[in-house]
Structure formats: C-alpha cells, structure tokens
Length: 251
Image 1 (cartoon, helix red, strand yellow):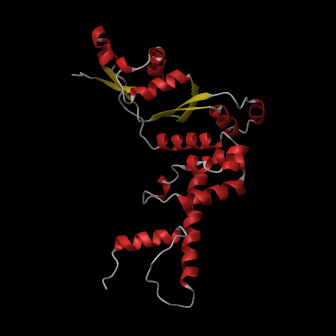
Image 2 (cartoon, one colour):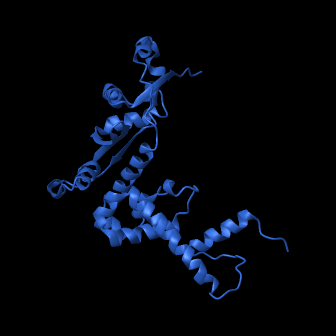
Image 3 (spheres, helix red, strand yellow):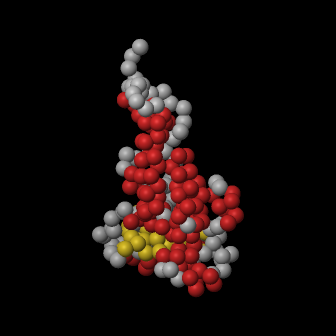
C-alpha cells in the first residue's frame, strides 16, 4: 500500500481540525490520538477566532464577548481557510451570522455590520492609488462618445447598501457614542462609502443611487447605466471613486 501524498495528509488533517471524519496515520503513544488532535484543534480555533476579533470589533461590541466567541467558533469550524496566511481569514462572517436565526432576530443589522467591517479590512489592504483621474483627457472626449465611456473604479474603495443605518451604528459604536446609538432609527436604510485614504479608512454615508452608480461602473459603460444614477457622476468623481477610463467600442 502506497504512502498517502502530502495533499491527502493535509486534507485529512483539515478534516480532523474541523471535527470531521478523518484518516490519519497517528503513532500510538501515551495519549489517545483524538486527545492529541484536540490540542491542535484548540490552537486552531483560538488563533482564527483572534483574527476575527481583530477584523470585527464593532460586531463584538454589539453582541458581547461570550456571544462573539460562540459566533467565531461556529464560523471557524464551518468555514475553512482559503489562504495559508491567517491574517487573510474572515471573509463570509456576515453569511455565518445571517444563518443563525436567533442572532438575526436579536440584532437584525449585525450581518451587514460584519460585511462593512470586512470591506474596511479589504480596502485597507489595497495601496492608495498614486495616479489621479485624467480629467483633462476626459474633457477631450466628443459628446457622441460619452455613452462609450467605461470608468475604472478605484480598488482602494468599496460601496454597499443596507436596509439598516449601518454607517451610523458603526460610527456610534466605534466612538462609544451611546446617545446616537440609542436615538438611531434602525429602520432607516443607508448606503455606505469605504475608502483607503492617507488618514486611514474612511467610512461615510452616501446617496443610494451614487452607490449603485459606482457599482454599475465596474461592469458597464455610461450609456448602459440608469439616468437617475448618472446624476451622481460628478459627486462620485469628486469623492475619488474613479482612477481612469476607457472607451468601449461595441460592434
């Protein structure tokens, strides 16, 4: 019988860490094999839970330490790592939260807060673009070519929309502003702008149609975008949403 490959061993060890059935050649010793594996499991869960703790401080503040630890453990055991770097871990925590009915019922906006915090993490890891938008070149575009313009959205930015006032809640919790948190209308929808700036990661509330415009520009030229969204083009440009443009010539 041939020895298992490194890939097979890694897969089986991952199964063992996640409390799934595994087949590993463990040498007989003083302790039971599963007791030895439990040491690795504990370290594994604690390490990745600490990563989540770093990325999601507002989520933790909203639900408390005990609840957050339970959420983190559930996420770690149900969401395998996709990168060897632990500091890249944490994507999909919002989906984990949204899958737990009692959490959704108690804090309905928590999953969106988690999504916002993950966007902050992602944007923070992208270098701030050095080049500025070539506005002079854009001014040379002929009027009949306007619909062919496709704007390049800055990778150091992100937008999201929510049925809840997540930007207001995020700022209130981050600044320990209990008065704002107690007074906020939790039924008010908000669109959020996230941007990596020289002063840090900016989180701001923007018009929902401006957020939709920025998202649409990632896949479409201006001629295919809703006119109600295009009215926010100047505001988005002034915000630094775009870094370049191209002309798309369709056959």
